Length: 235
Ligand SMILES: Nc1ncnc2c1ncn2[C@@H]1O[C@H](COP(=O)(O)OP(=O)(O)O)[C@@H](O)[C@H]1O
Ligand SMILES: [Mg+2]
Image 1 (cartoon, helix red, strand yellow):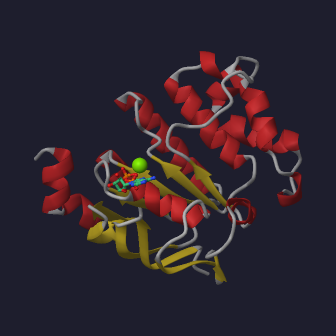
Image 2 (spheres, protein in one colour):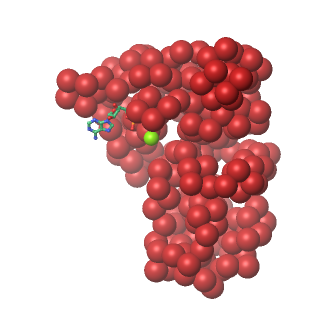
């Protein structure tokens, strides 16, 4: 069943319409990318799905259940996790404490220790940093920790807002590989990025510009489009 169905979504801030009637869906096992420059409306889409913003129009459904009117904690309880821009980890807690405080017992069949081990399996660097306070870790490690925190609740849909921001190309590549592993272990991913190098690992995606859909399709269509080539890949 469709994990996330977004239909004619419109988001406005007062008189400013930030997202104009966009539609897309995320199916189980997918990595779907929402690409666009700064101000395109990407974060607004994620915030609407998470229940942080009320859309002015449109519908949002997950496996047949409407997300409209749900609070952020209720959306999270359905298994939709949101890793926001800027990471939001607890800087003065250790890596492991950051994982532990994210665990919601009611949602999980697995124990805290089992979930931690799964996170450490995906991000071995976090295992070696487990006793270190988060603010002493590198940007890449902090991003892994933010993703690890979301994984502590075994989401069925993991939404990430520009996880590559501020990371080196090498660290970005590593993080994208780790996202592919998370997908292989059963979560679907909705990835928001300005960085077009994520197109290769995506199944499908959508390109947003000024809140409008410029293009949507499978990864070959995105990669080969003139718009993406000119705007992102510099060719
Ligand atoms: N809280 C807000 N109040 C008013 N305007 C906002 C707010 N948040 C975002 N916007 C505007 O909405 C548009 C889309 O922003 P955003 O969704 O953050 O885009 P992106 O994540 O793609 O950079 C921009 O024009 C931005 O200035
Ligand atoms: Mg944003």
